[in-house]
Length: 213
Image (tube, rainbow, N blue to C red):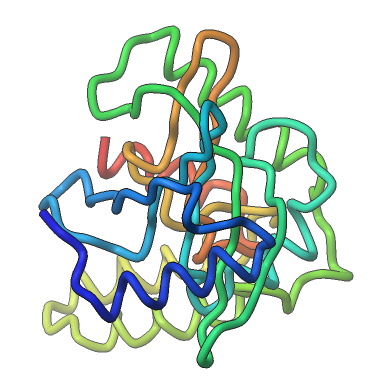
């Protein structure tokens, strides 16, 4: 699949804003694992060095700034952020690894080790509770879903779920922890795509992974 001319111009300008000479750079779009469509991520190669250029989603810059910028493992390093024509872009570490789409016990243990490490850093953190995809935003969305239920038994079960969801301890959660948002290398698992992250009930990430794994 080729990149259209407007995208080439945009990517060239964004790369230049990171003080990278686009004439020395190979840029290749990444594609979604589930449907092979483009999604605002590009691989940037400069000789033997490789990076990821990523269009930032709604909460992602705030999440990286508040939670992930000083973390030395379990997340990709972020080398900078620029704004171009109203959109934000990250230049990030390229992580070589396999997703959990074909998961082994060892891979799953590495993924859980990384998740536990990140959650332990922000356990019951209330200072950053409103940053990113906060509990308030998460809860309001779940309440709207519950309002669509027409069955009384389902409504009662959902009310119980919301009570439990609100009561359990909260910490940093990746609320889009699908199998292809985890890259597992020989040594560790790296969690990517943090646009739906915030201080949420701690089981959110694990439940999401189980449901889609």
